[in-house]
Image: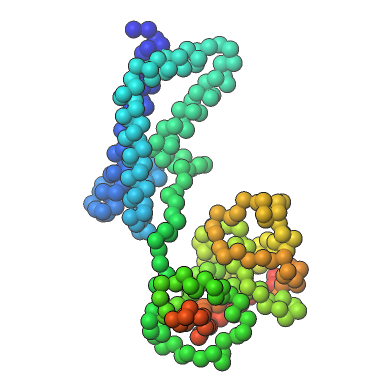
Length: 314
């Protein structure tokens, strides 16, 4: 048996083994989630390295992601078995290409990098400086649930609701709600609540976390309510983003051409907003609305959860 054929068969066995592991690991991932706590700690550490360790937020969506990965690798495994001869032939050619003395270093770099990418993708290996990514979700089929009764201990009165809060409501979207009732927008993380920009001119205008230009911002701004440093950083980030948005740009490109932020929010046009240097305060609110049978929206309660000043005032 020639050296070329021996090397080709070794590569074939490697691809076959990684494909088999790519089937078993996602399935084992689901089992370890369903039997959390009964798995040996060394096994858990192994799966953590493979970026497949289940978390407390594990849901059926992630199980479906694991199943799809298993199916993908099962297909690769089947192709390897069915196409044994042509695959061995191509792997033998790759071995010859590897040993060609012309541009030897670039050839081996390309070959090893391609092999590492393939194996990392199949096993979802997290090397520290990159990762294979996470599963996506569209929330298809998810309906907003409204309560037929007011929230407990809620005093229903319009007299204390600031008029500017109405700007945060896109009333025409109420037709998509499944039923009438009460809905409260409130989150434990301050930065995830309804946000308003207060300008020196007295204008108060709505905004949202699209201005943060990051995902999972609530993990960064955990102490926004009391930490002046975090408040200063967030204020500077918002001012910087507004500097582009008021000019109809998302960083260097016009918003009509620029790739949108990863996390999507209700689109707001900031082009008519005052200059960013006129921004004086940022406030966050919890809002409760009532939607009647005609899908008319009324704010029945509002609570200001936090407000902080421009950095120069901190």
